[in-house]
Structure formats: C-alpha cells, structure tokens
Amino acid sequence: MRGGWLIFALPPAEVAVHLAEHPSHELYLMCDDPGGTMAKLTGAGATFGRSTKSAGGGSRSMTIPGGAQLSIYQPLHASPIDRA
Image 1 (cartoon, rainbow, N blue to C red):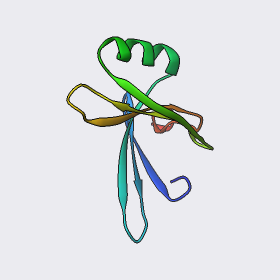
Image 2 (cartoon, rainbow, N blue to C red):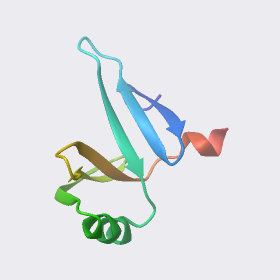
Image 3 (cartoon, rainbow, N blue to C red):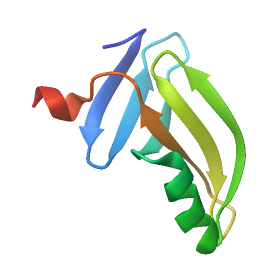
C-alpha cells in the first residue's frame, strides 16, 4: 500500500484502488518510454491529454478510438512485479 492506494501488478499495467470513504479505481497502462509509447498509440488513433506528475510517477490521459479513456503511466515507485 502506498499513500492509501493498494497497487496490484497486472503486467504490463497496474490497478490502483484507493481505500477511502468513497472508494475509487483507475486503470493505468505502464510504460518505460512515454514519448515512444505515445507516438505509437497516436499512430493507432489515440489522442492524449496533458501530463500529470506525482510522487509515484507521471501519467497522461488517453482517448482511444471509440471515445474510451485510459491513462499511460511511467511509475517511479517500486513495482509490485519487483516484489513477486
């Protein structure tokens, strides 16, 4: 657990579940090279929102064809995969 979030390894992704009065969840697709990943996904029709950074890493929201929203994420914290 980090900062109130349970982080589960789902290679190559993470699911973060915040244990609060009003629980929430988010799905992040992990990447080591955000610029390269964005270039490939843009070529496949994705568009990206602005970059956000936190102590745990940096992310960008992504709209994929069909309008669904996901985020790509470059983690700065130890991955649950490293602990397995």
